[in-house]
Length: 311
Image 1 (tube, rainbow, N blue to C red):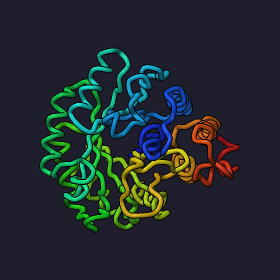
Image 2: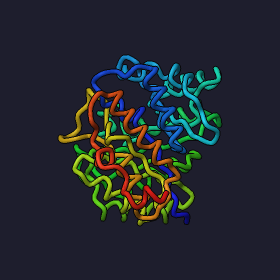
Image 3: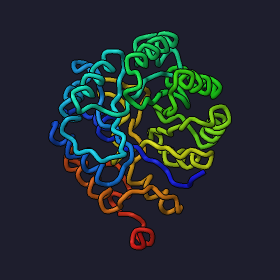
Image 4: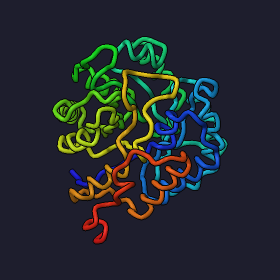
């Protein structure tokens, strides 16, 4: 197994959904272009959420039409339902769509009802319908929320998460994001789950998407790596978590900070394939667009000197 990791930059979607003020289309395009220039192989660009319920992404089409794309980069859009997939198909037909879409599921009944407005079985019927509409136009990414603990139901059996991953596999999905939605995971739980996934679904790319609600996110990323995971989600400055009008539990909702995750991997001799100078430039742009310092240690201290100077 390769030591190199693949980091998906999630600031433009999972990050901005948490912001109370809507970021302009021009700024979103500039951000995504900066992420592309830094070398991210996957970028979560936007969401086809309902524009009234989540107004931050009412400009999904114009954003995707305006970005400068690099060959080989996957630009992902979240599609919460059939209508979202139909919008993604229409934009793709117009020549400016996403080439990767994500399909949302939750590991518990309570979170499914609150987040998706349906039951667990209802969500799987919805996903089957969405996959049928998508056809072979996109690379499909399954997403399992509250996979390491639910704010409403507590512990989530890892066997259930494995079962959900296999349901995605049965529908042709080869990339599945494992979401720790409210930061309830621990390194021990992460290692156990990712080892179980590697054994049950060895051909699936399991993506570690860990929120840093309680400050354990980056430790959980290393635990996932030690268990064989090579795909990670993060967001510049630790921004994001869930829409502004939704609250699950308490504390910070944010993601693992991209700058800190990149620094950790590179210090451990694990290649991210990213341009350090352009990562820092993108970090500064994120802070400029939001108008405040963000929650990244490396944004303040810079990359570890020995590794950075020898890069």
